[in-house]
Image (tube, rainbow, N blue to C red; front, side, top):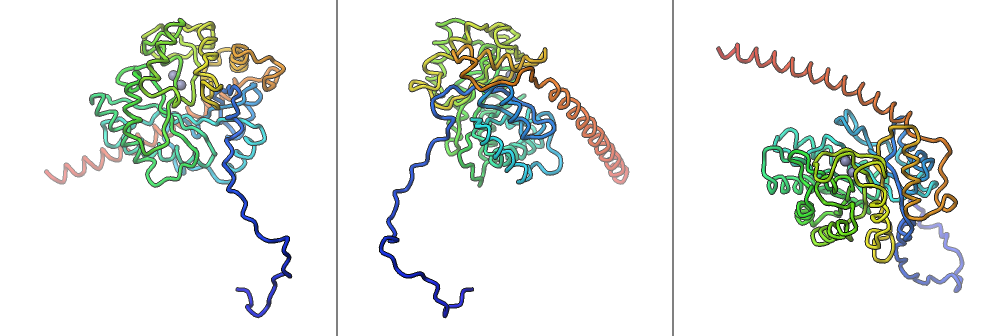
Length: 379
Ligand SMILES: [Zn+2]
Ligand SMILES: [Zn+2]
């Protein structure tokens, strides 16, 4: 505590007089400047901050990542150490990448009628939110889920309730949760835009939005390959969720035909949607980053890497479609591709899955033994 007898105030100077400054209006982030934001899903294998460098080397100015392994339940601590998160945020600022989109874990199913699965999913989605906030993400893309046996309305209610539960008491800052439309495989919710609207309607207290996947849209039966088809589809989106709530487009060609309800992504221009259709999609006034569109809306690739360099070529293909020359676009690194990172990621996932399987086998064996003992005791 300061000694009250020692006076340290400096002499009064009229020019120092406090003048209240107007409260600054928060500036929108640089990526909302109305420029095209083109990104790709990059790998976090090895080092999470490495995903940022990969995106930059591929010539992207936006990106999507998983914040943890997408095909297994997080073991131990699901959080990212603050030192790593700070390093990630700083590197992202240096590379001026935005928006940063995170895709949630594939195992999460908030619509599951099975209690254990549902609880696990809500916890895992809560962890997704925590990691997204700590990394400074702008959007968290979530697959709605599958109701399995239950009916659609019930599944939608469960999803909305699960989302609210997962976000309860959290300060989400500028993070927005985007519900992604699906191809409608099996009992998946979200192949119809009305279903997504119903989820948004029931989560009115959360910052929500929509991610539109071109492959899923086409596979769900919306023909976006023709000019009229695209107009009709966009009108359907606008009537239901509203185009202004679509913050991210997943730009993927489709290996499967219109209405297949089977989700298989293909490289841009090599699938059933085709290059001409992507040209119309990216340049549509209402989908672009201009006045009639939405500043900061991102086009994110989730395309396969069949040949080294496919990732770089897909990014380049999108810049070509919007008419940004090689000189104006972010500079890609010659010969860079994520092939190696993808292999590493696969090996790591397989190793962890093997360990998790072995662990759960051990546990169920233990459980079976305990059950046997119990039933013996009853006899
Ligand atoms: Zn997608
Ligand atoms: Zn997909």
